[in-house]
Length: 217
Image (spheres, helix red, strand yellow):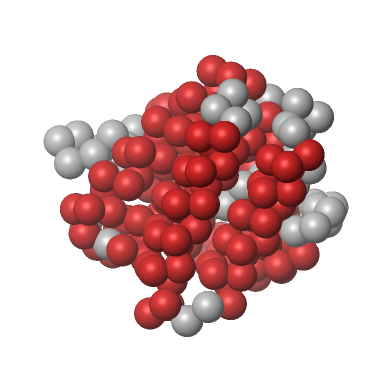
């Protein structure tokens, strides 16, 4: 269980970086700070220090949502922080955090399904294919693929929408399709203000593509 939940955190990340115009200036600045701090913790901080850092960032994300509860973007990022905190934490307590993240993403979709170029679909889809199924968790590969395809419909050239679909496909042993998706992820345009996150995602995409190419021979 601990290993399974940790793998979730290694994959989760938001899809877009430009806040929606509906956000107040203060909330937009807070969103940008949460995004930047998330990337710093996830990609640059030693693994042993991440749990405490994500727990602290989760409190900041919670305050941001409380201040502007109708901002889908903030719910999405709260979910991402909770999910990566779960990965750093491990165990049954981590699964509870992932369930909280699921609720935040579902709320974000009710508020604005297109927020951050549909990244709620991307993140929720990734949860569905990584979390264990019933009776332990809510994992469901069919729901995962449907959500990931909705994400691609909203953001067909995005680095994360393509990466997560590629990861899902390779887990399904659909290696030829996975190769196409991962190559598209690597060709995605840079996101403003997301240099660290983009670099980390590209490294993951390259490693996964190597695995897929080996399977294809």
